[in-house]
Length: 285
Picture 1 (spheres, helix red, strand yellow):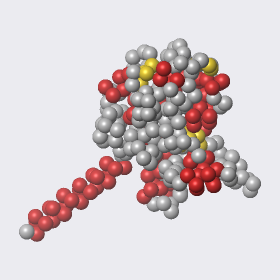
Picture 2 (tube, one colour; picture 1 turned 90 degrees about the vertical axis):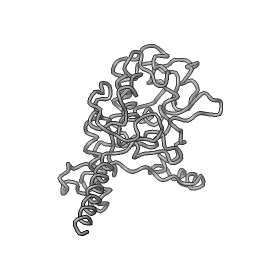
Picture 3 (cartoon, helix red, strand yellow; picture 1 turned 30 degrees about the vertical axis):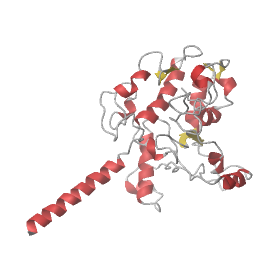
Picture 4 (cartoon, helix red, strand yellow; picture 1 turned 180 degrees about the vertical axis):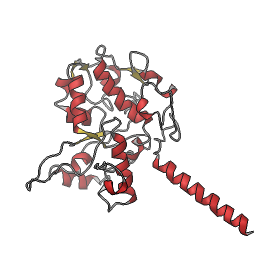
């Protein structure tokens, strides 16, 4: 009996360790389109950043491979072919949404298959804007603007549709993303300052950001990640809480801060609107 009990305890302990390690490897958006849980995908060509642990398979992203690139049969060349560098930024964003095992850390509060306020580095947003500034588009908000699907509006350059990189990141896909300042600035005392939260570049450096986020989740009081053997890195902020409408109106009268995120209207990334034309991350690109 003692041996059997010890064996059972050992098995339970092992399962717990495996479950904990698995949870640290991320999870997938539960939209029914892609994998239920992340796993290695060594043959990913387009979204190779996630080959070690992906929520998508090669088949899931086939529409990003064959030119012209498209999502849910909505092609990106409605205003003419995109420049390769501009298209590459759009693909990085789509790869994150479809394949990243960490995207689900920023879920929409009402829609499990959508994202809200994913913190993108301001430098990434500026680079994205510079890459696409001369390319043409016909919809400001691809997540909700009907022109994003049928492109009945006039085609204008990105630099005319969006004021700058922050405007692009925080407008093109509704409120799925928010720009976070990643350039360190000096404080009044001369010490290094900057934004309190880290951010994502949709590049290999994101691994350090997510590692810092996990470390903070395990020990919220430990801010120095170097003590845990991790590089010094600011962890991205968790998803912002959803305030009632009255609280949002009150906060908006006082300017920036977290309310600058909450003031943005929530746009489901993969929901259908009242007219059945589709809206959101997938339906408007």
